[in-house]
Amino acid sequence: MLDEIFLGNTVQNWCISLLIILVAVAVNRLIVAFDKFLLKKFSHTRFSRLKILISSLERPVLLGMMLVAIWIAATRLNMGDGVRSAIYKAYMLLTVLNVTWAIVKFISILIDEFQSRTTNIDAKLLPFLKRGIMIILWTIGIVTAMNNAGLKVSTLLGALGVGGMAAALAAQDTIKNIFGGVTIFVDGHLHIGDHILFEGYEGFIEDINLRNTRIRMFDDRIVTVSNFKLMESSVTNVTTESRRRVLIKIGLTYNTPPQKMREAVAILKSIPQYVSEIDSDTVAVFSDFGDFSMNLTYIYFIRKPSDIRESISKVNFEILTRFNDASLDFAFPTQTVYLEKNAEPLPEKDIAQ
Image (cartoon, rainbow, N blue to C red; front, side, top):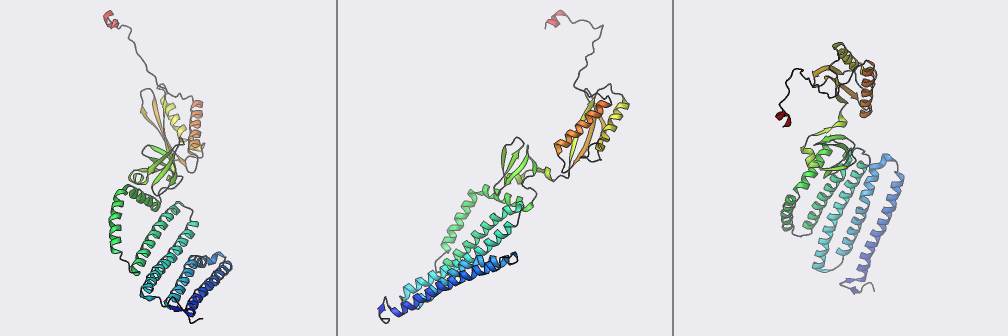
């Protein structure tokens, strides 16, 4: 019975080939069980690299063993040159793809492991890099597999080159925005939560992705700006300042005597003694004569991370209190009109006009 011919081969040869495949399946089961044992044994974080290696290579190794078993089982049978050539091409194609799969899985797990330990905004760049690396590796793997299988890929590569140029021209704005996003990630001068000033917009960065940046304005509206435009423009990052410079002008009435003006300047210079949030290197001067007031210019610096608005309010309250205690009068817009007693009245016709 074993010597009977079936499809050009004896039943015994068919059984041996089938047995080779079944042995490969059994070995695969043993490998899976052994991998589970190792992952459980080396659960400590010191063996994280070993766990990464096992997790990434397990399935490609299993598939590789099955491919080898099927190749051995098939080549020992008499199937004719045509079938043998087809099996060889399929084997070469699948083997290269399997190796590519193993490399892709290993690099993907490495990137995911690194990303899980990264908490800053640069981690947003990793998915983009991961996707790009995966595309490149799979492209190389597929082209290599087709070439090893005897398929002509030169015509396909030429078509892909022409199509790629056309797609690049059509999507040049998108590409510019993506490169702008990568530049933002690499430079690291803008981060989520930063307070920025940009072309009349002021708000906090809520999100940065590969195409655009979302800014939440103080009125709670969101403005979406393309990354390329953001990189081309001047952006002021308020968050990076070590302290906030504040300039105010205070106008006193023109009937304020010189000694009172000097007292007002002295009061302004003493404000840091009463407001702990500001530095002592303030500037207080009698700066100019205005249309209706004599103006004082006061420059002070609020230390970070003090609340800016609350600190400004404290300074203003202190100035108001101390100026009132010193009987210093704030000026407000006024206009003085002088009338001459002996001035001739206007003619009636001019008055009528």
